[in-house]
Image 1 (tube, one colour):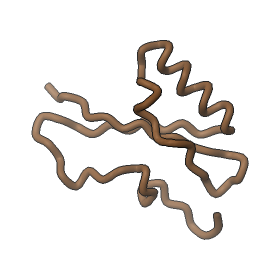
Image 2 (cartoon, one colour):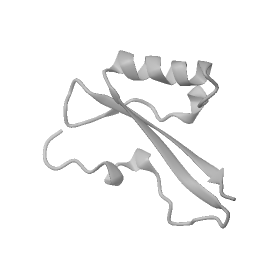
Image 3 (tube, rainbow, N blue to C red):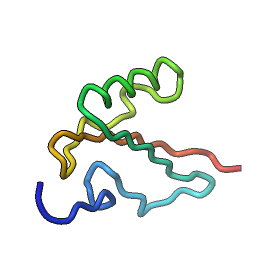
Length: 78
């Protein structure tokens, strides 16, 4: 990848243009090597933090050795 990299413009980042009352969008992003990202996703699942299927596929970054994955969920706000 070349040029400027804006994470918020990445299609996997999602669109929150239709907010829901009482709910707030929360995103968690993991950066690292392919193996490190996959291991962290599985560790988060084993700790009941996030389901494995809640993460995006591995996504490239401007650094060819670094990948990312994004987990998005809505939280009920009190």
